[in-house]
Length: 256
Image (cartoon, rainbow, N blue to C red):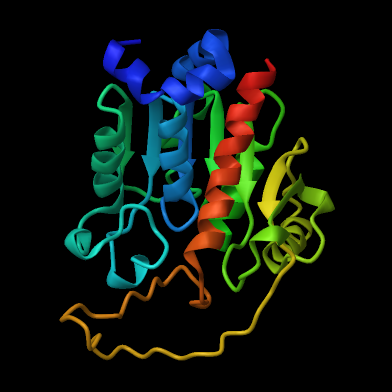
């Protein structure tokens, strides 16, 4: 570890010690989905000493991402998300090795990702079909450690965010839909895995159309055809989901 990197990670080294920091630095992590959850997970991992990180997302930054995504700002609107995120992460730790892949994880592209080459796989995908595909493929014996985020939208209370094994999640609509689809298609995870989730489900109280934002000339239209519905979100909740996922990785390395 170079002197500059040691200075950046000084407080983390003090807490975790050299042996844990070596494990963190040598671990390889891949995050699928770099939105409101995945972007903060990526940032927390790099700030914690992860040096080998792959981020995967197909989208570009839109103006409505600014309220909750780490790389999203007025100056990055229109840029490829993973490229903007990679730039931000390297500004935090220039010694990190950040691989940015603009792609979608789905049944057709799954084999293009060398999942066995990673130590940790993190699911922050918001497409139901692709999320199910990733879970079923990764939560199998012999695969790297796998953590998943359930739905982070329609939530306001940070104290309700928790971690449970997938089949013990109770009250999360996304987890319920995933389990129903697993039963319908007879495709199940082959091992237990931990999820970050919250039982809170609030209604959408406001409506925003596709009109121009009165504060600037950026369009609010960012419909993603893979999403069944666009729901309201808050930055503190999506960030806590992402930070918690990162925490699961760092805690696991600390306990080894």
